[in-house]
Image (tube, rainbow, N blue to C red):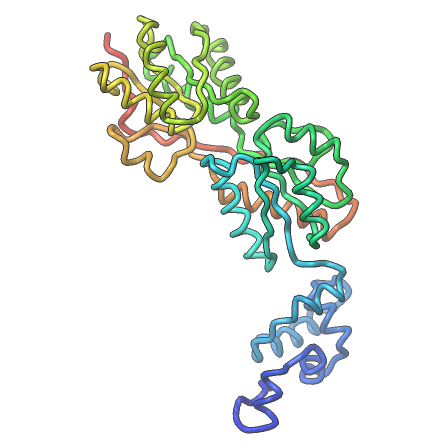
Length: 344
């Protein structure tokens, strides 16, 4: 029976409803209520249903402090993020926050940079009470330093490379690049240049490798990639190199922002997209559908990435010692108007 909202003392009882109140209303011990709320396996389906009926009727939400004392958990995930100013890490962070919220966890975040190292950030979060860490570490050296730290709590690394000593989740960057280049090859392009991201980023390495290997596998020539830095300015600057390659009819840019700069530069040089040059990006930023022309790109499923990262971490938190396999999230090609068949 629900606790009444009318009068006293019933009205007061609702305001201060606690674990023992729920136990009394359900006709069970408070230890049984605790086991049900913490999803303990040693409770019968009938008991679980009886307790949850009372919980739902009274809109009961257990105190986080009480839960932490009962389970030795803080219901908090620490996130160390590198490159938060870039679209990929920022989108990954937002998806982790959403996934954690859905599991009734809060998130504490620290950004690496400006003198703060990954080890210092991890140490700070651990000192302030987290159940585990998710490290968004796009740079290869960051993962290496993290593994040297030998963290003494569960953690997951979001990175395109998969070191043996860490549980990792990532979007399959290699496969995304393969899809992009295959799309251009299928349209009839042969000389496909690449504007690469900084090659100390694992994502950039995987995209460059996917571009190169797909060309080689299809017997297409490989032209030395143009070095970019993720910014539209570096895409704009790449135009001179692209146009110097006279037989080039298509470009795969390692992110949408560099693709935007490239399209701008090609327009200024009198080169039409896609009539004279096809362009593919990577990320599918919200504004990519509104470029002129709308950009063909590779969409990363950040919602799936965040959910996988949180799920992998909480598997470790809730089942200590369990081996958690790495997760690869498959991206997909989104075809828009920036690509077409080469001129004959």
